[in-house]
Length: 65
Image 1 (spheres, rainbow, N blue to C red):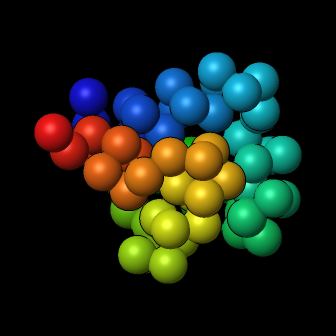
Image 2: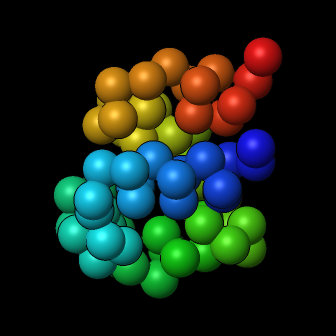
């Protein structure tokens, strides 16, 4: 699974809409949308924040085996 699909799946599994998730990360909902469509990718610091939020490793977030 790609990062964008994994992020969307994690967000939905935790019943968080894009707007709420964006507010938690202090970014715009459009940024979350771009990440989930693969248009852009988060910075490493944002990836760490996302992984911490979902209490998973970066490897899990990036679907690295």
